[in-house]
Length: 255
Image (cartoon, rainbow, N blue to C red; front, side):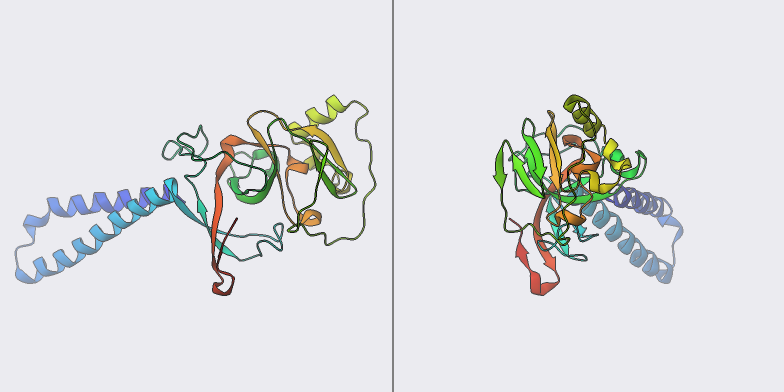
């Protein structure tokens, strides 16, 4: 979105420069009056669009919750602002790359907005879609789920924000006898192609690889997340959920 705004702003800037070049041909008072009015509007448009693209890329981005995977923390249709600089800046208009000048690292419990990895979109890397999930584990953590219960580094994780909408518990199915092959298949996002009940309620154990995170929705039974498409690479991270601004009755900071 920010790149599109920037390009449109550049187009308006070029139009403004062209108008300055032909300004001398508007000699009558009436034509000069309309010229100044049009030039003023175009000047306002290009400067506003370029500034908006700058702010959206480096600092704050608006985001709309697309699904119910984060219920009841965030609901479908909620609008929020995303803090894009807290985890560090990226080189302008390069959507995937190394971040720098981070104020903090991603921590367990952070609600993160990120670009969907290709594995989540069936390998179609050219498609760009933003997701929002909660980070439950960072690089080096061991993660497993047993009968819907999350364990990180062997410790049971009970969180008040987690909900389960399906009372049925799918029993554990051994996909691989060799856990090394299980880990490899998970890292490659191969669980996307198998029925969800194979990994939804009983998952792992796996180790989150270096430079990656485990992202899971608070609505555990209805969330398409890292259990299926694998660990999230740091290069896809966009920012941390900051403030829910719409609907007004649900205004609040997101912690």
